Image (cartoon, rainbow, N blue to C red):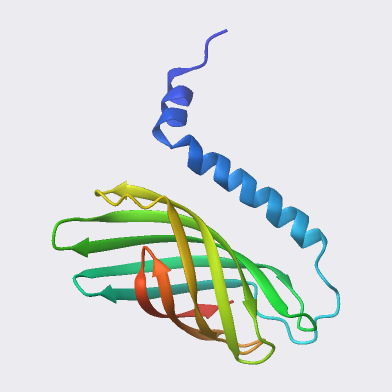
Length: 168
């Protein structure tokens, strides 16, 4: 039995690392969602769409992210965990291109101010960027139950960034 050409073409066109990473994140998300605490008084809205601009000396980036809360618990130190997918573009003196990343992270803080940290693989769509990991550490202002948020921090490949978005 032979596999049709369009299936093998599709499989080799999309990097296998991206496919396996998405399956891995899906499994983690499903298992963590099953462990979610029932004692949430004022939960964060589950899905967030946010964008950001990053600058550092002769480097600039623009990124858009889709994020989904995986767990929430206002009575613990880590108040929420999330998974996100981001797509962005970058430019510098010698290079420009696009990137795609998948990250898993957490938030701390019970009110409006949060410390956020996330990391995951980075895939270069085009360009000469040689960065296999995407990571972010910063501050997020988002009140439980409210839709608006803004964030600032340091990230790879975004550099020093500022962003804002909406949860729904």
